[in-house]
Amino acid sequence: MSTPSVLAIVDAATAEWAHWGKATWNCITGAKSSGFHVDDETAYARYVIDTYLPLHFRPPIRWPSPADISNDDYYWSAVCVSYIMRKAGFAPADFPIGQAHSTYVTWAIKNRKSGTPAAYWGYRVDDALATPEVGDIIAYARGRNMTRAKALTYYDRTGGYESHADIVVAKRPGEIDVIGGNVRDSVTKKTLRIDASGRIADPHHHWFAVMRRRDLAAGATALISPTDWRQAAVKITCGFEVNGDPYEGVSGDFDGMGVSCGALQWNIGSNSLQPMVKAVGKPAVLAAMPTLGAAFWTACNGSVSAGLTTVRGWQSGSKLNATAKAELKALMGSAGMRAEQDKRIDEVADRAQAAMDRWVADGGTSSKRLFCWFFDLVTQNGGMKTLTRAKVLAFIAAAGPANADDVVCDFLAGQAGTGHAKDARANGALWRGVTGEKLELLVMSYLRSDLSASAWRLPVMNRKGAIAIGKGHVNGGLWDFSALGL
Image (cartoon, rainbow, N blue to C red; front, side, top):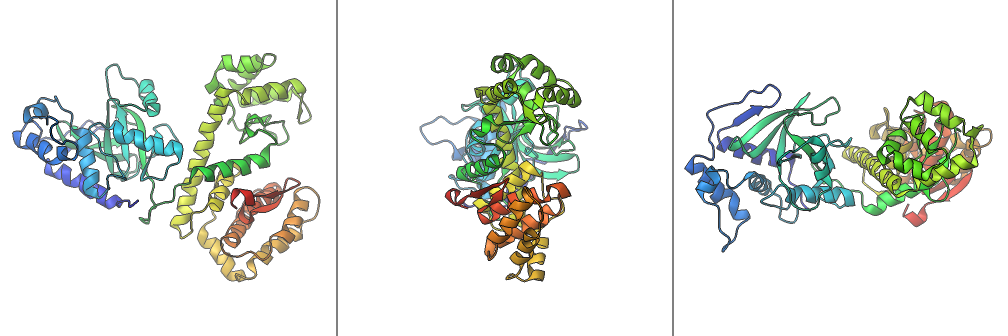
């Protein structure tokens, strides 16, 4: 797969825009330009037929006439985008063309859902990663009686549907510029508002999808995390947290979070469990929790402090009573809640992928080991804080490649106490003599753990180090990830 550069896409889109006279529409201020060419002009209707349509039509299919174009009896926006992407350099196997935007939008969404390596992945517009950048493509739904809620359902549709898509050609604080065909009967550049998180905040259209490019800032194609990478990451991170079926994992208030549930231990204290409970709905909660369901539903719809008070009332110390544990387990194992967990696991995996891509852009190499490391980091710790690859390499250079592992392992060997300290001492003896990627990730684990609160430094070090090396002592047990390819 050869992915054209962002510049090639922008140049191709801008060339078409210039050919049509540079029409603009600022959707923030409402300002619209004049004096550009439109498809009511015979020469430009003819241009659509002669330039865009040969990609899609072959005899004996009847081609639209200039009158069809001018009278809006044929919508040419999708063939325009298809032409731009071909002109930018995409091969047919790398970007599907179509007379409907749904052809390539559904393709990109399918890529993202399946983890398929491809030039674009499609994200639902309210996804945390649906932050359009230059070279991305954004789509909104069309049709009678369209609403935002209805538009969002288009993300999961697999057949054809009415929609429109534009190519992002510029981004500034609070706004983006996009170019699309058959907008104001021309090829038009629109300016759209984006919010503080970088997501589309334009009220004029019912946006539902953002097709994100899957390449690095440096221009090299990013390696998409294959499905088995994600499966391995889930097994490792969930295994650290719960025994048995990770989706049904339930634990009490050992960490001050009230109750922690599911594969990634979403909890009341951080307000990460409540949205999932609300998503499955009250009937599902009551069905799975006949005794405590009503109280749990109320707990998840009130304040965090009130929710903590409710679930702590079901515990002795940090141990849940039998009824609470059984009913929470039933809820988390229900079909609806498993689906909610899958959605959030995908979001974590996407953030891990993005973090890995940034690391690779700084000179690292994509791998299953690196992806699993970042998946656990995103799940447990959030992010890298101030740690960079340059700092990791500087540490190794200062200690010497032959001695950097000893610096880390000497630190671990010197830990006094039981629990996590005991694991650390065992790891200090286990992790010496590593080189290459394992050494870099071991040092990365050491430096990142130093940025954690002191109470959590050893748990972070033990977990991340075990992933870095492929085996290690965590939470009182010896883990070996060789069967997972680490």
